[in-house]
Length: 382
Image 1 (cartoon, rainbow, N blue to C red):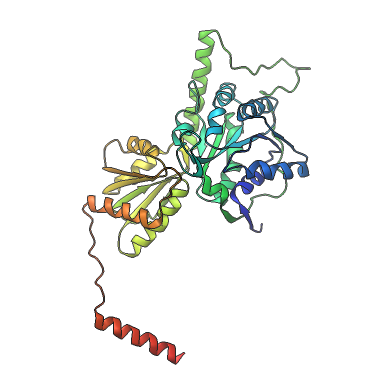
Image 2 (spheres, rainbow, N blue to C red; image 1 turned 135 degrees about the horizontal axis):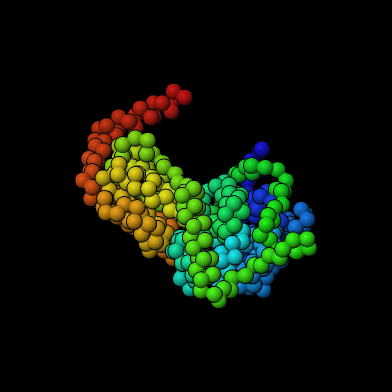
């Protein structure tokens, strides 16, 4: 298939359609508003349904109802909007229903600002809502990967009957990149299996309900959920290793767009002779602890860079269980590390690890003049 230039938010909406999702319920909030805007025009073209809910709370209950009757469904939002959906997501998880939601993160806390940030890591992987439940959480680092992971999110949601979240910062949603969709047209509809409410004529009735007043039965529900999460954790960990096929002194850990910035810095420092690898979790839940630890063992020191005040770093610390010193640098409020700033942090960690390179020898005045003459001579000869 040929590539097409698309804004990230619009590509996310189109990816859902290619995955067979033609039902969307959501509420506009920057920096993800282009997703519902795009789908409001696109879904009627493919026989789908689009409803702008009166609030994020309403949207979370709409996707709850749609999933309950066996419809593949999507909602998207941004930071405070996801917070408003937390109760509904807990109900959905308790009922083992497949839904996909996308969080294009903005700066916080509170209303914060609309600039990109990664401050919702804790919310997504550790504390989305009340009770013992988890979301599968995927973190793309490009628009193309956002497309791929949205499609994967539907597959995982239906494989395990669980809500799946894709998290990206405002850059993922707003930037334009060429993308290629893995399939044409609209994907096949969801097979409701033996769990959806499709009408009980000719079969026993089914119940979708998260209220369990019997403590023994409620305990069983939680044990069943934990068993499912253990299977997910065992089978669905995904990560990327960059520049790790050779010995390295420093391991950088980053996720999402921050990892792309780190790659640029790593390449530039590599040209200067520094040996740096990158570990990027693609599934931030389940977090690939064992793979992260293995990558850490090959480094003298570890550096975690995030666009928050320190969230994923806790999982890196758990993975390392004290085997390496771990430095952390974060930025918030919508400020984004530049590659030069990332290089500065990497050089600091390298110095702490005892890895210090001598500065390149500066050209003497005579050499500079000679170089200028050669360049001038070259221009004349051309």
